[in-house]
Amino acid sequence: MAHFHVTSRAGEAQTLEGVDGWRLMELLRDHKMGIEGICGGQADCASCHIHVDPAWAGRLPEPREEEEDKLDELPSVTETSRLSCQIIWGEELDGLTLTVAPD
Ligand code: FES
Image (cartoon, rainbow, N blue to C red; front, side, top):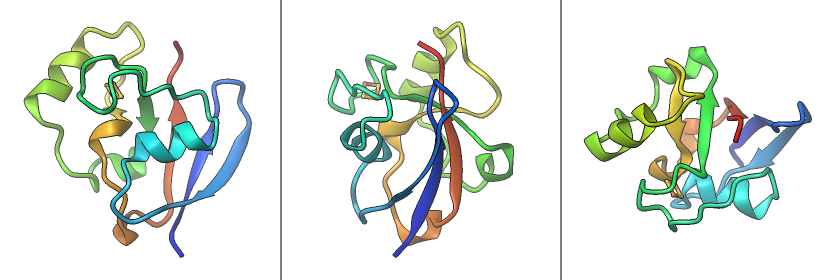
């Protein structure tokens, strides 16, 4: 079973199990990692903002234009920012490491 490593806004680290075909946002939300997913995955609310470990940033699918546009609006955006609702879990993400972005 593939897993990923998350650090919460409070600095608490956890390792969570992935579920094939689920959005990363859904996994973070259901494990109560401080991700709300208000828009349900439409790249519209940015409540699912994460910072991906730099070692992983280039291994994820490229963001679509809607995601990039939304990220550009955020004060806490970084080079490795992503909207977790735009990342679909698969075994190839085993070991993914991320931090939940500040509000
Ligand atoms: S859940 Fe709204 S942007 Fe990701």
